[in-house]
Amino acid sequence: MAATTHTVTNQAPPLVGHDVYGTDRALREGVERHLSAAAPELLGAVREELHELGRAAGSAQAQRWGALANENPPELRTHDRYGNRIDEVEFHPAWHRLLGHAVGAGLTDAWGRPAGHLRRAAGFFVWSQAEAGHGCPVSMTHAAVPALRADPELAAEWEPLLTSHVYEQGLRPPGRKAGVLFGMGMTEKQGGSDVRANTTAAKPLDAAGEYLLTGHKWFCSAPMSDGFLVLAQASPSGRDDLTCFLVPRVLPDGTRNVFAVQRLKDKLGNRSNASAEVEFDGTWARRVGEEGRGVRTIIGMVAATRLDCVLGSAAQMRQALTQAVHHAEHRSAFGARLIEQPLMRNVLADLALESEAATTLALRLAAAYDAGTEQERAFLRIAVPAAKYWVTKRCTPMVAEALECLGGNGYVEESGLPRLLRESPLNSIWEGSGNVQALDVLRALQREPMALNAFLQEVGLARGADHRLDSAIKGLLTELADLEGIEARARRVVERMALVLQGSLLVRWAPPEVADAFCASRLGGDWGAAFGTLPHSLHLGALVERARIAG
Image (tube, rainbow, N blue to C red; front, top):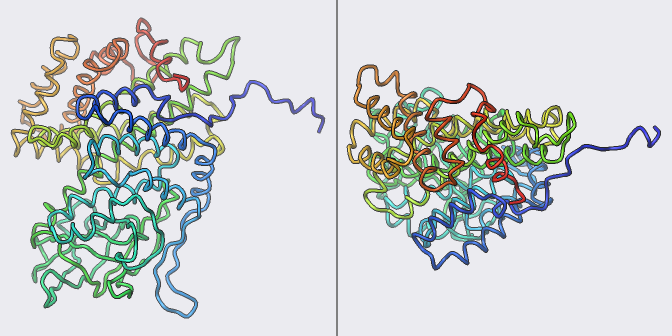
């Protein structure tokens, strides 16, 4: 083929070699805002660690690791060559590189260091943009800590390993490792989100707190981990006595625990990560917390992973936005760069608005964890499931719109957008789908009046600053006062709560053009049913400029 027919022009250069943290204004400003209020002495050190992680996440090497981990998904090895069960999951070396970097960056270490949740949340947000699938064991390991603290002895044994900055692959007794990973097994074939329908049985042994488990788990996250938190029935009746247990993969004497991995799930996305069906048949376990209080014990883990769902979706939204803006900045059509075309500018501004609202909300939740006051805990009780419901719901349509900004270029695998799109629904399903989150908010509203008071106090901090926000708060109060058909209206109510909370945060902290655009479109009703329908009179150029990675 003649070279003259193969000249490449009008294509965007690869988006590589940038600082994912440093070029994200909303993220950077949010971290500094919360850190300045809570631990200003840490500003310099946290800036340095996040910039370093951001440069790594934006590097060609990390992008290559992500591609390889997804092109070479994990493989299950049930038996060795002699017929012995080994139940091991093998990963491509790139997976281990990604996971090792995450652990080394402290992404499983939040609970014991100053401003730990904020800095860990920002790091998780940044590093998830390199590759999302390996975030599952990172999240589970981080989130296991509050559940294990129900048993001080277990916490003393396991917490230093869970929060370690050393990643050691391979199954060995935990005492011989410098760091471990945790997974979780809650759902079963017949129950799904209704964990009360679980049938896995726990038979007590003579030693206090020790049991043998028999049963199955339909979804077991991160099956290559060193330990798992699972739910099982501890009563002879096998009903309404769910208890939380710790199941180690390797027993203290070095023998393998009974942990039969039946198969790995063939999933829509999240291909680099292993999700498994497992069988317990006389599997040794330690009780965590009180017998019959399993849901209450494990709920701390669930709440922490739900926040990671918000962070993970917000990170995907930011990555999609970054790709769309980068492409539009370098691609020309109809006599001008795409980023200068009024209609494309409207689309990009709308995507930028959605991304910043998600980022700002996620960081506010992380900062509330660090504060740890009774008021903030009450706020989180409603804000976490509401945010989880809304932000994860917004991820897929936003990623799809960003892909469309690249046209056919975005539809091919090499762009990375198809992988991002396949990943985008996961966080909405994981740790309770939309209905579960909405009903959880209703449960908190009905049973925990302090939670609603804390939520209303938070959104009320911006009252009087924008008439559209004030009107939305008034409308929300009217919705909450009407109990007729409240369960059928749960999604509508929780969506409104999330939008009002995002609006309050942006009015207080974002630049005026961002807050104005959000209130006009999301709260004031001046918005269409698709992205790119913002009022033309808004400062759309300023929103797009704020989203550029050059910032």
